Amino acid sequence: MSRLFISALVLFASLLSAEEAQTLASGDDYLAFPTLIELGDEVLVSYKRGKSHAADVGATQELMRLAKATGQVLSTGTLAEVKGEIMQMGEWVRFPNGDVANYIDAQEAQGSLRTGLAVVRSNDGGKTFGPVQRLGVVDGVEYGYAFDSITRGPTTWMLVMTFANLDGGKLVFKTKSQPGSVDVIRSDDNGLTWRFVRSITAELGHAPINESAFMPHGDGFIVTARGYDNRQWLLRTDAAFKVLQKADLNAAHDFITSHIGRPRLFSRDGGSYLLGRNWIEKGVMQLALFQFDPETLAITQHTVLDNANKQRLADGYYAQSYWTEKDGRTRFHVITYKRGSEKNASIVKLDFDWEAVK
Image (tube, rainbow, N blue to C red; front, side):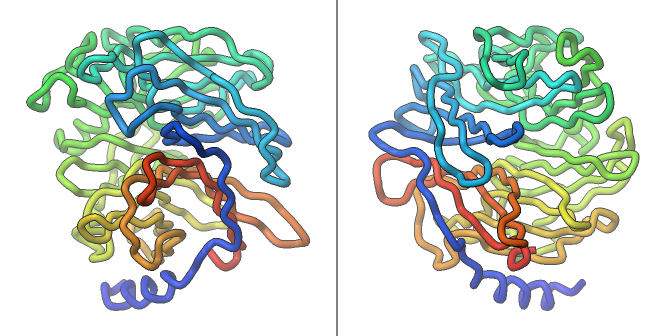
């Protein structure tokens, strides 16, 4: 597909706006980085409660329960708190036996050095959660940041990152607080033990990547990775995560000028999609949805979900989505965070007609 045709799609798609925007949580604290998991009639949302984007001593991981059908906030509370540490990013994992867990990017108060993945787990389908524990060392490596997970049959895979200050981490960048390799690990016993599968970083020739996501595709997977060199990668792999094909989305598409912040991948109604924060020019970010061809890895449509008028935002747009059915129509719900000119960020939900989006 030509770049000219893609640009025409971008111009059209930028007119799309949410039919409804709902602030789920706001106030005097900095509320950011929501992730979600659907559990029957509820949607569980974890997010950070702190005072700033980073270096946020005392930040906790909070839990919000939503009624899936209505979006009503049923309850909020603290999911994980460790005195003197930062509970920064939480990533949900659903295991084959029905247990759910939240793997948290735990950091030291000084210098934001990783302390190793923290985890809270529910053995009753998300009704209650146990105390904060540690994932620990996996095949000689302790990981510091979890990005995404896939459960298929008896196996759960998780995308995780090494750090130089943790066991098995290698100093790839100049400082110990910088990340090393994005790896795939797997569990065949519902998360009780894990083992190393493959380094996505190594598969990319040791490209400097960080936030990543993946989804099943045929017998293998589609992986996307944010580069510290302002490149966004899209990969097709085999069942063992060996790269079969790769695409530098920045080189292929002029509407992606930097990385896609906290990317997410999903498939729906026969389409494959990439969701995340797109920097379109210096100081201007948009929440964007990209449809792509999983065989060619080419983006076929770019839809701007928020900030089509290019307002300057201080922070935002780590997002996840879910769907509901109402009056014979499919509703597309996106939960994200956003900070404009105000001091603090808030958790918001954007609602769309899925037919208009896809």
